[in-house]
Image (tube, rainbow, N blue to C red; front, side):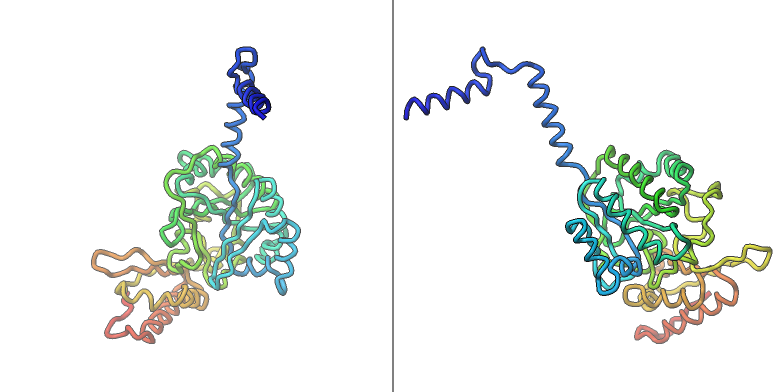
Length: 347
């Protein structure tokens, strides 16, 4: 027994290079160090890919009775998940390495494209990236985001605000042909992998959905109309794109208006002021009321941050008749609320 124990100790010492006759070479040690580095890189590599999608896109991915979704989960061994909260937007999550995630995405995008219905093979995808990495995607003076547009023939934008709920995620929106979306994303993720995340990681939970600020963080409103916001897409008309990587022809990310293309009347902007305390009356649960007002009036309605006076300015963009209808609907919403006293929606 003692001989066996001595033999084990001796072998261990030789393996560790304790005996001069069995020292590891510098090449061997270098190999070990490199292996350790590779292990650390592997352990810190991206294993989760997150995308913000409209509820209607989520329903398309699920399919009738959930058949599409179950088929995807069976095919890819549960490496795909979609949040199921009853909100206007959901989070699509793909797990695994990049190759696997992009393969799954290539199967999912046609379902989204068919739902969005702009034209065959055309789709919008909104990827979620850490706020500290957004600058790397935008590039100096927006150079990198412009490069993506030209190289992949896409309409691209990084939205200025993080997603609601004190999160650290921002939205990168890509619109164009399906293969170009995937190829552009591969380059984006290569950039992100070389850009370490700074600070905490707080992912977006759709239960914190905020219908007011969708145009600032890149969210979706109730019954989001993809066709109305994308028929004006022109990848060659990018000269006027501004900070944050452009803003979709300067019309806003959730425009529900078909602007005239000829020399007819153009939309105007009217600003109204309400007490900040009445904002909730206009927004409604999960933003449903303001979404309905936008849809019925055909106007773009934007809420500014509260003023020091605790008032809130609301910008209404549309044709004069549409603006009048939007104001009427807003006044009606306020009057029907329990908070209505002598307050009015004043121009």
